[in-house]
Image 1 (cartoon, rainbow, N blue to C red):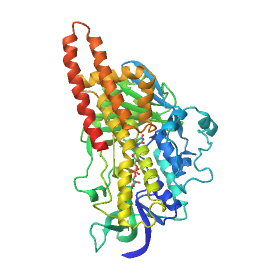
Image 2: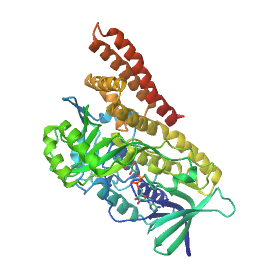
Image 3: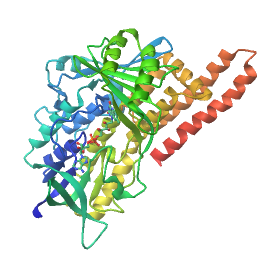
Image 4: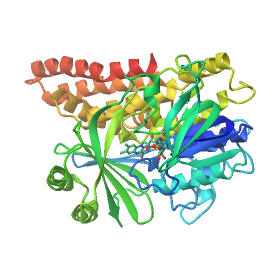
Length: 495
Ligand SMILES: Cc1cc2nc3c(=O)[nH]c(=O)nc-3n(C[C@H](O)[C@H](O)[C@H](O)COP(=O)(O)OP(=O)(O)OC[C@H]3O[C@@H](n4cnc5c(N)ncnc54)[C@H](O)[C@@H]3O)c2cc1C
């Protein structure tokens, strides 16, 4: 065992969030070490569509160019297919988005136009700048990550280490204070590194979230099965596609490079389903429900049997700073939601922005000042709630509606789609929330219950005079279901 230098900050994990936190803190003059167990390009089916709110955070961090030179495809909004009916939804207008949610750079992070998208083989910066609406982007996750890591490694204040963090080291004088990490570098070589603050960004399967409590664990209700569609014709180019059907759970589709399109098919199961069962489901239920142009590439992908399964986990964030000192969780290790709405990176990157603003030397000069750090982390917990409360609750609520498996949920599902068809604020509000550009829980609350009452109204109209008594019964049932779906999550997220 050897003991090396100590740092201001150790960041564990170089996924989506780790490199952004490490870069921002280093640019603010902190001495940072980032440790990642595998610096080679990952091949994952997660984090491939970034909402405009995530891009805004990357601009604020001066790291937007991580989306360049990876053949990224811009996203202008969503296309929804429901029972044979199609609907295109655009992302918000820039003027509206900027009014409610201004771009404010993280101090010391934005310089030399590093907040500007560049022109490359798939991105035209002029087009991006002149688009009156905000944009999202889709890309191959591994290549995006490699760009983020390259930016981080180029910072003079960052030391990048490869190794598996096996343990948080606690102070011999105070078992409630983390003072560093133990890293397994290879077979029998371990090293210890010390820092004033250790930030764990170890992602979905985090080993270190349990440091905040043995009961701090996510729940799983469903899985996503991912397949690669090659040279697939999408009905509405430059949009995320959501396919809803009565025979299958929601399906999302987006183009991640000029040749490759990702399809993620939800499957309701708390355990990882066997491949044979999935194949049967995809073949008999999902395939017939897909838009016609997508079916040939989906059939071809099915026959390769290369489908990958990921759990869709939910984990509300915990308050930090008091029980365990010198230790911070951020990203998926702190907080997860359903990936249906593609909001994970947006929440994680916005947390990186908020945290690094709060930890700027002007707000806390000495990171070992525990009392001040605790205060900053309390501010972090409170301030992040608006965006994370909206994105997390929306993801769960929309998944419940879109995967409707009971009569009241089906009424809500139909009502939700008809609500979107009305256009105007019935669309601009929900897409503003989903895109991360409208981080206001009251607006979510308002739209959710407007959908519920509108669904009840549509159901009364559809039942007609003879079905009126039944419609009244269903009205109570639907309202009760809406309250039961929504309220626990909004309370858990905001309280
Ligand atoms: C199926 C699915 C699809 C998704 N799709 C989207 C999407 O389209 N858009 C979106 O915004 N979000 C999406 N998400 C969520 C998104 O992927 C996450 O929110 C995001 O990756 C979180 O970033 P992170 O840095 O916290 O964790 P990760 O990106 O998972 O990074 C964690 C890093 O820590 C490293 N690590 C872990 N343990 C250790 C250790 N002990 N020592 C050293 N290193 C370690 C890992 O190797 C990894 O590099 C999806 C999630 C799922 C499950």
